Structure formats: C-alpha cells, structure tokens
Amino acid sequence: MKKSLRIKALVAACVALAFAVCLAIGCSPASSSSSSTNAQASSGDLAATYTVHADNAENGTGLAAFHTALGQDCESCHVGDLTAELAAMGIEGEPDCASTYYDDTATCLGSTCHVSWDALAERTADLGDYNPHDSIHGTITYCNECHKGHAAQKDICGECHPNGGQTMTTD
Image (tube, rainbow, N blue to C red; front, side, top):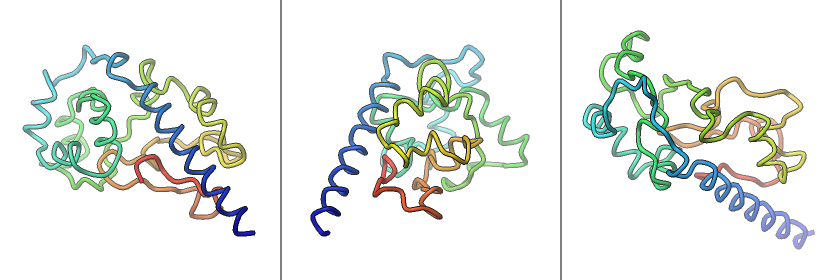
C-alpha cells in the first residue's frame, strides 16, 4: 500500500513538472506580443506605479513571478489601461496582491499563450480524470479563480475532491 502511494506521489510530481515545462514552452518570450491598445508604454510604467505588485512579480508567489521568470513583463497580462480599469471599479491606488480585481481570461487564452480552453485541456490531458481544464463540471469562467497573478494559487477542485496528488504549478 505504501509503495502504491509513493508511486502515485512520484507520478504526480512528474506530471506537475511536465505541466510547468509545457507552460514555459507555450508562453515563452518569443511568442509574446504587446497589444497596440496598451496605454502603458513599457513595463517600467506599471512597475513604477504598482511597486508592491512589481516586487511580487520578481520575488513573490503567484503566476506573475512564474511568468517573469519566463521573461514576460507586466504588459504580457495587463494589456489595457490598468489604472483606468481599477478606477472604473472604484479602486484607488494599488490594490492588495491577494485581491481578485483583474479577470482577463481573454488575455490568458489569447493566441500567443494558452490559445483556448480546448488546447489547454489537451496540454493537461495526462492528468486523466483529474484534469482541471476538462472537468465534468464544465469550464471555469475566469482563469484567476485558481491561478492567482500575485498570490498563492487556489486548488478549487481539491476543496471537494481528491485530485490525484497533483499540486498547482507555483506551489
């Protein structure tokens, strides 16, 4: 019984590593592009305005640090006028890193990164019955329900179901 658990843990670790490699390949700097509608001229503009988030992208938890390590910048995810978007939501200044103010699944599933829900489900098909991107419950509306940009990831499937021992990429 213990040997079976160790094998499952080893398989889960290998799957997590393979998923991380797939993410790195699928969203490499060579495949990124900036939006022509971007109000910020460079990542320095966002980094200077949102200093806590910029530090988190360099040293913190969450996908911002993961994507920064891949060579991405702030505008890889924040493609619009972030300050105006926050103001429209009544948020002044820099929000807490754990807030969920930014929901832009269209950016995550854009043509240069994760392409589509179907393509993402195919990339994680090796998770079998535990594939969170191909769930019997349907797709999740916003990527950041699980994948937090500047905070620890949230395994919402694991809140109700055993998930085969898998962990989130940045955990």
